[in-house]
Length: 124
Image 1 (tube, rainbow, N blue to C red):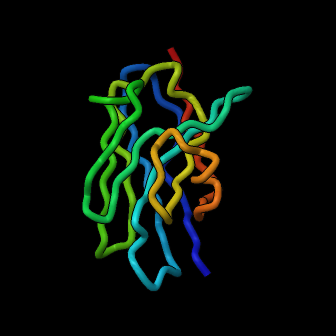
Image 2 (image 1 turned 60 degrees about the vertical axis):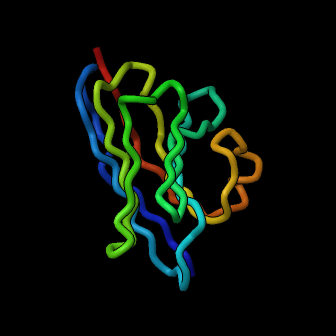
């Protein structure tokens, strides 16, 4: 059974940094894509960053240059390094893994495997 568990969320002041971790287990093969999504209260879930099995990365325009997605295949772990955090980055962050879809294609990403989320709160 595939399981994704996020950790590393918390509260941080604007301009600060956090690193999110997603520990993945249960796969008998490497997922083609892994990604981070986020959902703020009252808003739709949105893709933040994606990495393919070939280590190609894609970022949402809103986080480009501030967030870095990385994977450690030896540890089956996915990371999201977040810096220069802004108030609008406040959200529940989720990791997902499975088939590759465009970062903006949440309807298809929903069919992949997901974690339960970790909260990130940025304050002034």
